[in-house]
Image (tube, rainbow, N blue to C red; front, side, top):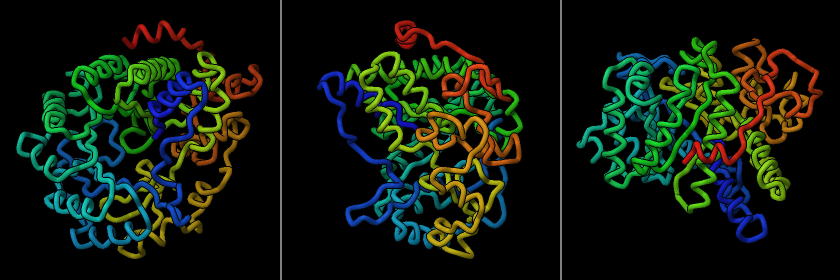
Length: 420
């Protein structure tokens, strides 16, 4: 996850104080505790595969029926004990639709009591007033609600008429009760025009966070990869998102804007700053290098509904081991798996444009699953990188396969007008 608002706030403080501030917080994982002991990864845990929806871009290819072999409550608790001992700081409870799991609140309550930061990832359609009260009483640290567009656009993606109204109602019910809520949006060519209205919706509803996800080639998202938003639309979307985040930072607004599934966003932000706030570009680059880019297999982990461990949620086709057979704490550091060995390598053994990119230290080679899905080689250049050869330090005439077209960014004043 790329925390755009965090960097924008630092830039505003730099402009006010005349010096770039020291980082206020560390990444949740990949850091070390007071005794120098490594902190474990953020774990996204698909506790159940069943879902009441069949979304077009679902990475778990869920459906509305039970799946055999899922971890029971006792097994989940045992895994939680191991995760805590392994210094995992964050559990994101996901699915499928996690609210369909009968013991979800029992699991969440125990996780909170153990000191985990506990998030809930839901489609929101099952959250009525009674459910909102239970979520509030439990004390989830964060609830993410997925919205793919406004009204009919969202309903088409979710394949359920009325899904948008139900999900928006859930956002309002939780927000009214003081629960930290975020909107989660995955952009494709089919819903790119809904980004601006969704950002406006966020402001109108007072939503705390907006998560912008680039389409990753996994599950049903892989089926639709040919419809992935073109690079020009991606850049225009980020121009708008960065303008929103900058305006919020200037105003002292607590809204958070984050992106995911394309670590080239860091290089694009650096380019944004070089054009607008050039005296802070060097300091920002140091911060981005310290962040390090893609963290699949390092700072982000996934456990699926059957207990199988994956480098992240987009690698369900690659199993690292199963918590029924070996504890997570033994599976995660094991580099006998060739993919994990490469993901944990510094630098990663990437090829093509990624290997020659001047921003490699910022993005870490970006999202490896896209390269694997398109070429069969997880270390090939990322086909989802939207930066031109010139922007990554290659000769403008290189014209390598998959090289994005040169697209000039809109002037900041125009982007800010669009954001206001």
